[in-house]
Image 1 (cartoon, rainbow, N blue to C red):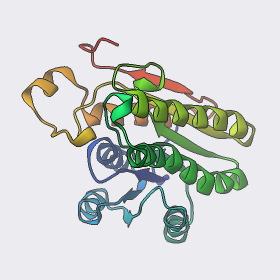
Image 2 (cartoon, one colour; image 1 turned 60 degrees about the vertical axis):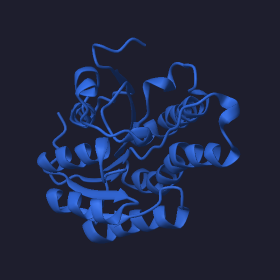
Image 3 (cartoon, rainbow, N blue to C red; image 1 turned 30 degrees about the vertical axis):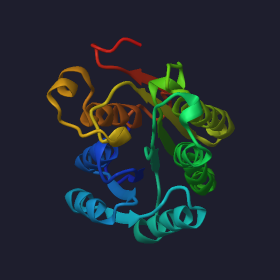
Length: 235
């Protein structure tokens, strides 16, 4: 079992929802957490709870992503874990989407993951260890009506991370992808905590526990993929 004490982890989308739950749980396990999101105020509140570092940034901006990594290394002197959690989505029939909406979804879900991995992997290669965890979606493996654009972005994110796993395994670097089903979060402008969602959806803390499980796997074990659903969900 891998001990997370004093491991340094970057968690994106950490201001709320799944990212917030991951940041809080990793801190409880003794990790030093770098909280990344665009919302500075919410991010600072999470960082205070984790006794970590708040770095407001847009994951689609290469300079800001590079700044996050360099500041992490300057502040802590090391980097062990990257959790690519930031994501956006919207659902409608294909012809109702415009190019700007397509670009936003792909920029955050795919380009953001690409830029974060591009910035972190060279450092991981030098030290010959590190763990990338991507929070994808069960729609990385299936399609559904009104999910063409979001689903396409998640298929692309999954392909990127799955290929990266093959590229970096020989350096001792792990790449894991988690595919949650329905989660009670702010995703797609939803308001979490509704009575129906509490009966039918996963909680952000459920996904965080899966991230912990993946990260705590023994050093020689890499959990390539892990899909989770609420027992009530048909998929």
